[in-house]
Length: 239
Image (cartoon, rainbow, N blue to C red):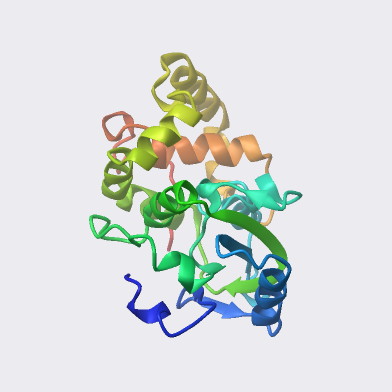
């Protein structure tokens, strides 16, 4: 969580303990930095579900358009912003990272801390590039219920993030939309319409993105006081 581990390495590559690198992962990161020799260049690689997990359509949404990762949003871009600085497949030059205070220790779990750091690195001049050929395989299976619990567990980290300069800028980018009454009502209506599909969220039947997005908001994101009681929820069981 500090710069100690990168001081003896010219090009650190960050990943997670549930990620298995493709055999060309390091090569692709190095090649990109050779093309972008400036100290401020950083490279984000692609995270894919490990094929042997048999990822469900929900997992594909969760890892491409959902709250876990948003690769589907910027797939065709080569320059991306701090919101997508995922530290599970990321490389940067140590001479640059050592000049910036790294992860904020106020974050007690792995949530939002990389986005907050990405904002500060961007302020210091970071250019974040996307290299889809630098691949790691994510070895973690998620049901809809497990993904909801992961998001609820990260609520404290989200509050911490929104108290930072990065969080305030994030809200400004999104126009404070999370607090708009009209949007909340629209989301609640959509979720109500789609609730009969809740028991199919973990099936191999692909559902429209709006179904996953609406029901995920209903069960995991909306204010806790407005969520259904645990014994009344239609949230699919993880067992």
